[in-house]
Image 1 (cartoon, rainbow, N blue to C red):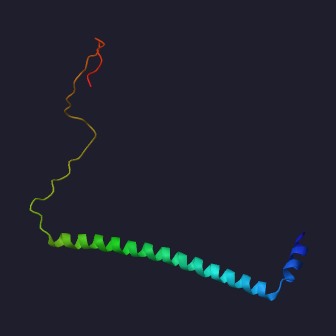
Image 2 (cartoon, helix red, strand yellow):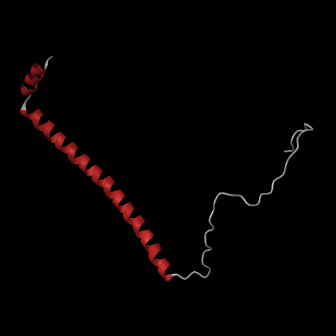
Amino acid sequence: MNGKQFLELLARLPARVWIQAILGLIGFIVLAVLGFAVIAGIAAVALVLLLAFKAKRWIMSFFRRDIEPAPPARPHDGKVIDVQYEIVDRTNNRPPRP
């Protein structure tokens, strides 16, 4: 069946089939849009709740007085100053204790 025969086959379909196909396509598009809207709505509500929680904590931090301020962060340059280590000698081939 080539393209021309396929188009002739479609042209011979009754109007009822065309109407059902069009309504089915419209219904599919509506459900797809509504489904996307529901997913986007849930994501938007979750984002608003998260931002509201963060804003509440930020605003409350202005009114809360900490008794002990946090210690300042020490700069870390990657050098180790003091290390304690122990050398374990296993030359006598004893099994390790559990």
